[in-house]
Amino acid sequence: DVKVTQSSRYLVKRTGEKVFLECVQDMDHENMFWYRQDPGLGLRLIYFSYDVKMKEKGDIPEGYSVSREKKERFSLILESASTNQTSMYLCASSFPLYSGRKNTQYFGPGTRLTVL
Amino acid sequence: QQQVKQSPQSLIVQKGGISIINCAYENTAFDYFPWYQQFPGKGPALLIAIRPDVSEKKEGRFTISFNKSAKQFSLHIMDSQPGDSATYFCAASNGNNDMRFGAGTRLTVKP
Image 1: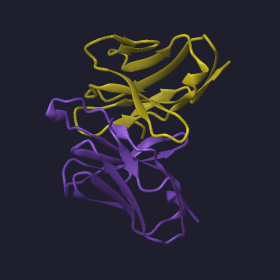
Image 2 (image 1 turned 120 degrees about the horizontal axis):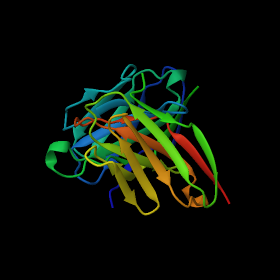
Image 3 (image 1 turned 90 degrees about the vertical axis):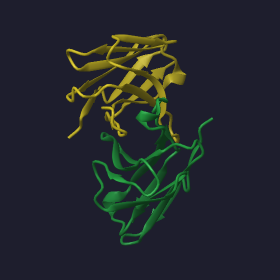
Image 4 (image 1 turned 30 degrees about the vertical axis):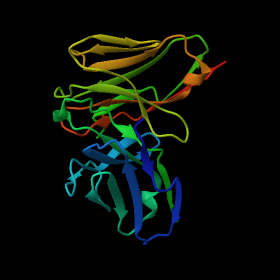
C-alpha cells in the first residue's frame, strides 16, 4: 500500500514563527504536492514538485516556500506564520503523467495548523 | 477563481437512497476527472475516475456520468449507506501534473 506520512497531525504556532511541515512518501513517486484545505474552498494547491530540487507554484504560493532535497521528502515552510494560514495542510504524491502509470494522487492524513 | 464548481455543499440522504453530486468545469483541456472521498481525520482517497472518451463509468454502487458538451460530470451513489457519510471532492486535470479540486460536498446518510 502507498503510504504518505506527515510529520504532525496537529500543530499550534505563534504569529511570526517559522513553521516546517514535513511529508514523506514510500512509493518512489516523482510528483509531490502541498495543498491547504479550507471549508467551502476545497483543496487549493500551494506548490508542487516533479523532481528533486524542482518546484512549481500552485494557486496560492504567497507566504509559503518548499524544499525537496530527496525524492521521498517534500517540506512546506511558512517563513513567518500568520493567522490567515490557520488551515488543514495536505501532502500528496503521484507518478507523473508521462510515466504511463496512473497519476492518482495519494494523500497523507493532513496537518491541522493553528496560528495564534 | 474555482476552476471546478461543485454542488451541493452538503447533502442528507436516507439509507438506501441515491446520492447525487454535481460538478462543472470551464477548461476544455481537462481530460481526467477523478472523485475523492474523505473521512474525518483522513486525507482524501481516490474513489473513481473517468476520462472524457466515455459517458459513464460504474464501480459497484458508484457511478460517474460525464457530459462533455455541457462540461459537467456527476457522482451517483446507489443504495447509499451510513458508511458512505464523508466529504466528496470532484477534480479535474489537464494533462499537466497538477489537479484542480471542487469545494467538496459533505454527505450524510441517515440510518
